[in-house]
Length: 179
Ligand code: S3P
Image (tube, rainbow, N blue to C red; front, side, top):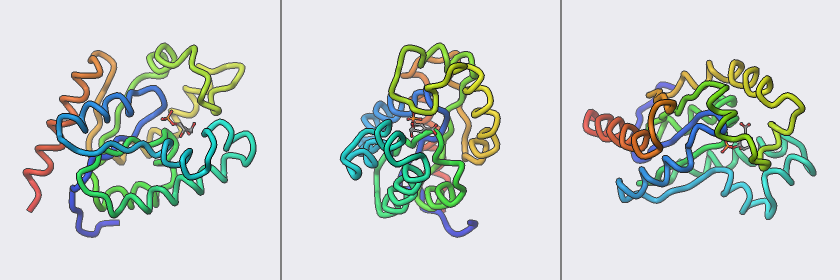
């Protein structure tokens, strides 16, 4: 979609464990924006956890809910939106977010992601006998979609706060450059 864009919002995309929610909450506080997380919206809508949606209804049902939530976000203003790691794989989601938000992708290597999320159990796609190999292959498959973001921020050598400040800076520059 190449239509006009209005950067009312800031959307964070990226793989699981790249810090979207933590960074998003800090950025929202600094910008005096609301904070929304697509997984939380989906859970509220479904009345159950993401893990239960995957287990009981399957991934396609989850992706349907995700698409619906993304469409509803188009009416938001002054909101930082943290998105689920697989959301950008549907390009209609990216196109929709781009109409109203600056898209910032948080990046980390598979090893760093694994270091951050090992021990966590709420991500159904990583309930795998070989989680690091799963992260490597999923990240490789998704990289072309993540690269469609307006800005890519490497999170590896930075604290969550530093990443948030970098994201805010990018957002403010993009807003200032709007016609
Ligand atoms: C997913 C990432 C999760 C959640 C679901 C699927 C993915 O969100 O949407 O478990 O496909 O990468 P986070 O990226 O917030 O962990």
